[in-house]
Amino acid sequence: MLLKKLIDGGESQCLEFKESLGLLNEIGETISAFSNSNDGFVIIGVSDNRKILGVDIGNNSLEELANYIKRNTDPQIFPCINTIDIDERDIIKVEIKENPEKPVFFKNHAYKRVGTTNLRISSSEIRKLAKESGAKNYWDERISEEGNLDFIDREKLRWFLEESRKQRGLNLPVDSPIKESLMKLKLLKNGELTNAALLLFYKESFFLQSEVKCIRFSGNEPVKPYIDFQTIEGTVFDLIDRAMDFVLRNIGKSIRLVPGKVQREEKYQYPSDAIREAVVNAIAHRDYESPSKVQVRIFDNRLEVWNPGKLPDEITIEDLRREHISVPRNPLLFKQLLWVKYVEDVGGGTLDMINQCREWGIPEPLFEHISGAFVVTFRLPHNPEELEKMGLNERQIQAMNYIIEKGSISNKEYVSLNIISRKTATTDLKQLVMKGLLTRVGDGKRNILYVLPDYAKITQKNTQNGS
Picture 1 (cartoon, helix red, strand yellow):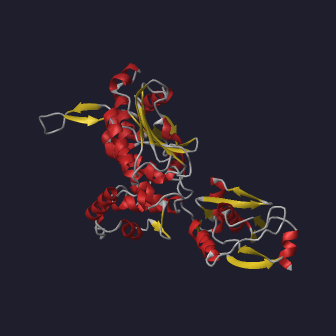
Picture 2: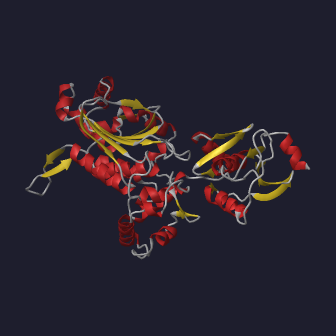
């Protein structure tokens, strides 16, 4: 018999033995491994040393095993399962084909076959497998390994349905059963909760990485002592709203005169809408496979929002400063945030941040990749008193304000702004460069621009490309 010969040959790259149906987790891991690596067989009722033990098979044993495999694999796997009599003992043969759509997960983890061992696949390998197979496998769309409907907060779901109806006209009854509502929102997969559903509506903190660390530092360096510190837990809506509460209580306000009004108005140091956009983006687009947390760091001279994970391959740092497509890292989560107008699906959020900062009279935000994270930095400008102490004249101070509003200045614009000669303009701009306040970018006389140093590389690329 062919199967008996296979068993006599021992475990291999395509053959695994399991003593009993009680080892369901190990069976599931092997099915994931074969699905991601190569065709294979799991023989149940055989020991590791090739002894035929047999298994007790009830009326529904094979059906229950098939349902267990289907329920706990993503994408679902439907192996061929048969019983075979060897040496007057019943054994179960499970045949698995390599799956064209990879990776195949078992209980939220993916495995690969290496010799006679099943190894858990790393996050980087998962992305590579998904790319090679031509199929996207998003973390937020995966079935939760431990979640169930008892974890869902009815009041949070009710608020979401009411708000979605008000903001976008979502036509779902607010008093529908939880399962029905989640199913219509596509937050259930094969009747099971997705990770996105738990991020949105769980009763208590479920994922350790779904937190926001908020720190108000004393000074301009990320060192203790802290003025304020808070770890925020909750649904994604809680994270966003409470992170903004932390920001607004830890950034200063200034008094300004408004043309045409007698009363003066208070104004935050930073545009709150721009900061909220950065916080929402960090929570919506972060890499949830990373154990790192979203961070909001506030210093005396800047505010940073740290997002675990880099930009998608389709978008570059330079793209963020012009019109670009929207590429959600977590599309199912993003869709729900869209219903309640926490996000817009047009790819214009970074442009809004840039324009809001210009209108606010502060430098444009800085977008960077730092140590595996995507970071947005809002900075305060030098005040006139600081610039005067640095030896700047009125023309140069006016030019610095112009650059904050416009993003750059040319020699010609400097001449027009201050009504001076080209020679004087050149001298003033050279001094600003020497003081480290500006950087000169571009080639040739016509393409020369002066920008804030942090944006020199981006502007250099844009001027070289003729944009």
